[in-house]
Each structure stands twice: as structure tokens, then as C-alpha cells.
Length: 329
Image (tube, rainbow, N blue to C red; front, side):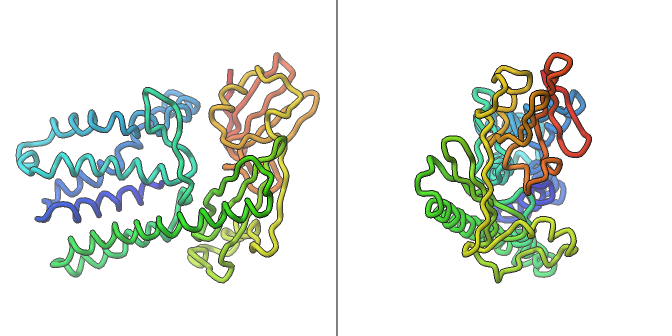
């Protein structure tokens, strides 16, 4: 989830949990703590790949959460430690950050450092103005209605919970749609798509392919697209189709490639990608993409692509987007 939403969640917790209002300094501390797990951004100073391998790792782990709470609590000044609720508030701020990342599709290593398995509930797109707005609006009202700040903060969290219940139900609708379209498929997935809780990328897995479509479960609902320039919104919305007229595309699985599976970069990509598919394959070049990070049929628009070139000993690169590349070993 984006940093702004994490910060707003910290403000909501800091207003909702204590019965008495926190001093400004402690309020700011909780807001910053709700953003703190993303401090792993500093790994980019080592390398882009180091960051990608460890982002949402130990700083986002539920196993490490008690250690982070103990460490932060030990550094607090005396007045903050006098509040019995403070350890619980610290834990809630970090746990909220983890939760807000888990509900997206990127993946969060909640069991690090014991496991690099990445949890992803696929309920909310990485940036969702509707979700963020529901959390923010009651807090803004609290600026003027100070006597009801705690009630409004609780309302903020309740609205977010309600939104997640909505996306959970729509996620199930999208899965059921894919099941109806491909009853013989071995598995199904629905990934959130921008602007609306009714926009989904649905995936059906067959033995040799992933079948994909973008569906709009409620075409009459504009969602947050109305707040963005039309040209920008259309880049995403042109992919969407009502469930009455779905458009499916088949992508060959990475394992169907003629190239040997031990080529440079392939082990990393099998770990990183959830739905790895072949975008280009020839005698000299192989390009693999992940359905999470690509839309349309133009492979150059896909982020996080694996490119292997036969020349010079099968060199491999991770193409982040555009011309940004990192060599893989």
C-alpha cells in the first residue's frame, strides 16, 4: 500500500485506541511507526535486486513484530512509557502496516526470516483512492469536530473494514466467474485492478496456459476514475469488459519454454513471479513476464520482465520498466 495510506492508518489508530488524546509528539510517533516498515527502501542503496529480494521482508514480519515493539518501546521517553496502552499501540501500528500490504497482490514475507513465502490476499490494488478516502474522511471531520475525534477515528477504521468486506465478496464473484468460464481449469485467481472494487483481472490456469481477462462486475459504477485525467484513466479502463462480453487472452506458461530451466535468472524469477508467462521466445532471446505486472499485449508495457539473451553466455536482465534494467546471475 502507498505511504499516504499507511500514514493515515497510523493517525486513525492513534485517535481510536487511547481513551484520552495523545500529545502531538506521540501522535506523530504512531503515524511514523505506521510507515516505518517501508524503511527497507534503504536496501536500494545496495542494489535494486537486493531491494526486490528483501522488500516486505523482516520489517514486515509478524514473527519479528514483538522484537520491533520491544526495541521501539525501550527507546521511548518516560512520559510515553507511562501510558499502559503504548506497547499495544506500537504493535497495532506495525501490524496495520503489515495488514495493508498483505491485502494487495505484491506479496509480503510475513514469516521472515524463517521463510521467504509471500502472503497476498489480492483484495485491494496497490493504490486505491476509494479505500484511502474512506479512511481519511472521518479524520478530516475530526479536525473541526474535536469532541468526537475518537468516535470518528473508530468510524474510519470501521469503514475500511467494511470496504474490505466488499472487496472480499467481489473477489469471490470474480473467482466464480472464472470458474464458470473455464470449469476444467486447475486453479483460479482474481487480482484487484484500479479505480473500483468491481474491477478485476481474472486468471484461470490450464495445463499449458494461463487464461486472463479484465472484467467489470458493475459497469455502471465509475469509481475513482472520475478524479483522474481521462487519458490516464483510459490506459487502464480500455482493458476492462463487462462480464457479459469478456475478452480472454491465453499466455503460455514459463515452464513451456524450450529453453533449459537452469538459465541465469530463471531461479530468481520462479521465486518472484506468481504467474510467469512467455512474452517472447526465439533461438536467441527469451522474455518472461508476470501477469501481476503486465496488461495488454505489448510486452514493453510489462514491468519486472525477465530477459535472457543467448549471446555472451546467456546473460539475463530484470527489466523494471522502460529502459531500467538489472543484470541477474
